[in-house]
Amino acid sequence: MSVHSQVCDLRIAVLFGGTSGERKVSLASADTVLTTLRDGGYEPLALDTGEPRWWERLEDADIAFNIQHGVGGEDGVTQGLLASMGVVGTGSDVLGSALAMDKLRSKQLWRSLGLPTANFAMVDAHTDAAALLSEWGAAFIKPSAEGSSLGMSRVDSVDGFKAACEAAAVYGEGILAEEFIDGPEYTVAILGDRALPPIRIEASREFYDYEAKYKGNSTRYHIPCGLSDGEEETLCRLALEAFAALGCSIWGRVDLMRNRRGEFQLLEVNTVPGMTDHSLVPMAAKAAGMSLLELLEEILLLSWQAGAAIKGRAA
Image (cartoon, rainbow, N blue to C red):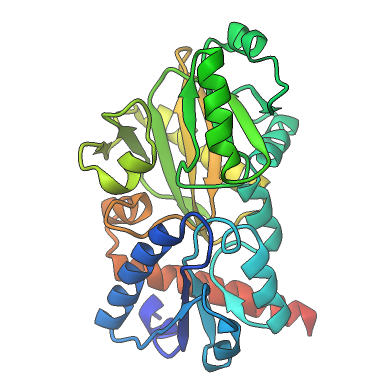
């Protein structure tokens, strides 16, 4: 039985928008998802979660395709709401979503399991920036619970450190400092229990920031990623381990870098990656021979099956 035949009769609601700093990206992702589903013969219900009492319309849907990015949509809040209503949602559950959104706890958990990730510390206005930079050389400063590189800066001076903390604080109280890794960046899309072809990201800017992700056209994406078969296998295995360690499931994306010693270092997991025309999961799926519609249908099927399994255990 084909994937399409198993999901073609589902009434699908697409959740998007919200009120986080990633609202604009979510709107762009939703446009892609809605257009693709409609072109594929579906009649999805579009629900902007930034509107009052949007959840009251979920009674018209069998499954909610969640494409909200950031706080409220990707951190377990929407996942908990759907679970409490008995509505199947796509992607990771409450625990996986909350852990992946929290960069500090992601790293703490990976470290406890022996999975590699760059040195890190929570910082604030009282942090001894000179001592930290003396040890690390340079650092990335970022909000501990935000995505799309919002509020993220690379710093190598005390003055720059303070300014970076102020920029990150706009997106929340928790500020994470991460040791700068001088090496190539990779991303691995996860679909079910498999890794899709890894992508090496070559940004023309100082790092792969919001501008490079969503606005510019100068970033280069390499598929194949240029690694040997053995190195690629190691990269994919690490991504799958990191994804599972946080309790994530169905689909997502794991971001990593490789240091000068050739060691892969985990950065973060995205449980609701973008679906814009610059997005990486559709790019990886295409490299694996999947159309965008096939990708969406597999996410729907995996989520529907997981939801049915949960309801079966509850019964």
